[in-house]
Image: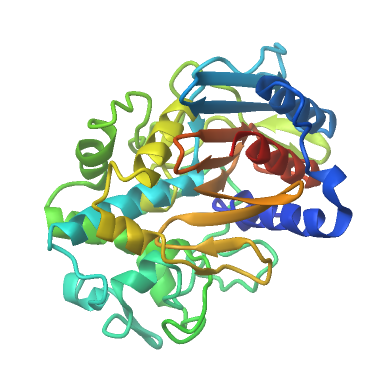
Length: 387
């Protein structure tokens, strides 16, 4: 798909494509060999993925038996060096699950009401051109049912002049604040009536980041750090500051395919994306986060139950969206397996992270957001192997 910084194919359409393939092509497309050791199954899937034309890939699998890291292809096309162990990557929209977790912690503390209109917390921010913050609830923002327009629409979708065109490395937007991004969205009429349907929209989570800062009086980065990163010892996870265009070592290079050639896209301005997709992390850290989340270590039971109340995301059976959390029900041979997670696409990287209630988690990443059908097949194979 195109160049929007939060490409929809970078998070759920890649899996939707795989689910359709699984439904239409039979077990041989997605069923891993149950006789092969886990690392071999994962290695074969990643090798096939790189052979399909992508630069490199890494899977980090965590569970009761320890941690496995499997790589294929190149983390650096110039030197042919592979993805490094403990590689830092941009996780894009997986950031949204961190943000949703903080919001639900505030709900548990009585500081936020899910059913309250966003106008209560951010007066005067959501208004104009038919947008009305009195009619949009916090719950609707979390579940992408607000109807608000996206400040950065998908390539191929109708786009107005005031919407951001993601065709650069992001430096042009270094000075954009969340207020600026919301102002762009407010200049556009809503997509539908609040609560009428699901439609993934980055504007929702920019507003939720603003909500967190308004309620706590602290920055989004500080709240995520004190509430999630520090308690879980996620030392390799951070939100970059403005001007911090690189990645901490070790890291793979991110690439974009331009006119048939891979162009280095590692350095980019992403801090302005904030709550919608700015976090940088590692596979091991993201696995620890999702495992803690789905096993009840970050939220009280009532709030975790609210987060896991889902609605269908599209016409593809097996994918449902909760409050910043996706439930995947995947065809794995003769059975269906359920996992929870999220995925993200941002220039240079595509990532999917999942976890099960049994304490197993996996993060799969490739160092380009321009994925292909083989990426979908690899995701299904790896998830079926670990779930």
